[in-house]
Image (cartoon, rainbow, N blue to C red; front, side, top):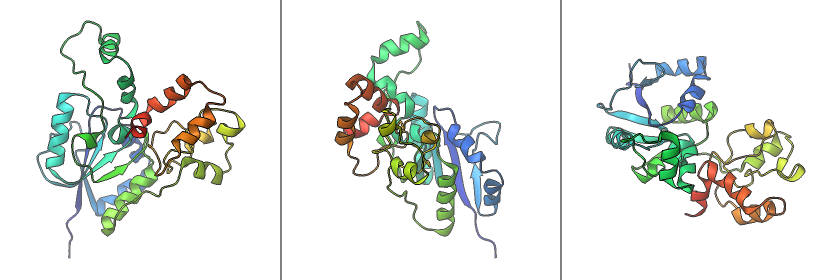
Amino acid sequence: MSHKKITIGMFSLTGCEGCYFAVLDLREKFLELKNKVEFKNFRLFEDTEHFPSEQYDYAFVEGSPITKDNIKRLRQIRKHSDKLVAFGGCAHIGGIYHMKKYVDKDKAYNHVYGQEKGIDNLDVQPIDKIVRVDYVIPGCPVTPKEFLQFIYKVILGAEFEITQNPVCYECQSKGYKCVLMAENQVCLGPISQGGCEAICLKSGQGCWGCRGLVEDAEVDNLVKLLRKNHSNKEITKFFEVFGVKELINK
């Protein structure tokens, strides 16, 4: 007896598509999913990306809605999907595009485009400000492991949840040096959502919070600690890279 495959649409707004390249790092494990899941509209596999016109069980949305066409497309995706997944930091919290929010956006436009006219210069916002989002897989990029866990949960009909542990938990469990305490680097590990396996700390770089805030994040305590060695301007710069500053103000 045959069973209908789960249909998953893979869509991109404005972004680097790094999250989808991360998925391809699964290699054979990704290909093994074809017996249970049918991936559609995956631009890395197809010559063109189609406007959503059929119904999907799940739709993954990568990138930020920073043009009028992006917003129109996002609303169409929501209309044609039973469940919608914010896939990666750009869709989840606005990503690095959020840095434009903290400067004069007209000056930013002129710096990039000069006198060129007719290019959208919208405010940056995560996709859940525009449409309803059912699930989030965070990160810049996402981790292939979490993508695979999500798909397995979908196949089994189970709910997907990300364990609420800070990046520091993974950093310590792997025995990496604490750059916050040992080297006085700015590191958002104590307040950032784990799941990335502390990959930046493995390279000796402090966490920049690309996965957003962990539940019950003690932001004030971290800022107080950082102020011992860093100026408010320097600290703020790190909070602005991925839009974590916006999450604090919610």
